[in-house]
Image (tube, rainbow, N blue to C red; front, side, top):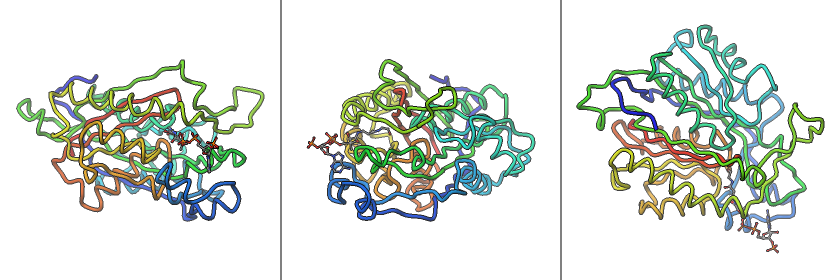
Length: 330
Ligand code: UT7
């Protein structure tokens, strides 16, 4: 856990990009043996965006990043670092982050990709928070950008109906917070990260450039992932609350990773949160992996639900397994 200090990582802007093409459940059912009824009942998903060939992780990430920088009022040349959570990079190298750096003209920033599957955004927030607190940089652009449509096996109806494409970004900037304001002041209060590589085989992509077989399709034992998800996520959010001497009643909004409405509801219920305090976008975006939390966060900030001063709890779980939480005061 990151200890409180006078230097804080404050969220100053958000931005998103969604591919133009929307595919509804009914449209998907024309090419896959499934139905709108099954997908809606089991997952809460109604539609997803699928990227066109030019909409790569770097293209979408740059658009989301540009919007986040504008919202923060931060010039690209002033940016210190770019972290991109992605499992679907344009190239094995260079990183998606340097493609985005070039597209934005963020010439002073360094950047790297972070591989933590659906937990990529939470991991990115945690690393950015540590870099900002340590004084290594004064600003970080944290992006989640994914094109899962390119790694889906459309012969496997158990997985191909669950995912979509998109990108979301936030700007974190270092600010000094007076010691008496450590609880009420804006900023990342804490992050908690976890991994259990013994569960690597229940959710993975079966190819990459380091192997001869580069078929690269997502493979998931959905039932097993589901079984672990609610308890591990409930543990990660309880850990965040306990570490900060808070209870669920102090949380204004839970912004969970958007994999399945049943998992989201399960965690909300365990916390005893009213449904209106849980941000849900899985119906519109499906599971966009590392992009899902910044997409949901942006929506709830721009529609006015999440306001300055609100305490927001983020959580995610994904391939690895990896999971974690971040507690942020806006
Ligand atoms: O972001 C990373 C984390 N990922 C997740 O959190 C995903 C976690 N897992 C899940 O969300 C759920 O396990 C799924 C949505 C993947 C599946 O829901 P489920 O309630 O666990 O269904 P199931 O896998 O147990 O399958 C139930 C039935 C099966 O038929 P039988 O064997 O009972 O006859 C499947 O063949 O549903 C069938 N099925 C489908 N039917 C229509 C599976 N996929 C589909 C489909 N359309 N797309």
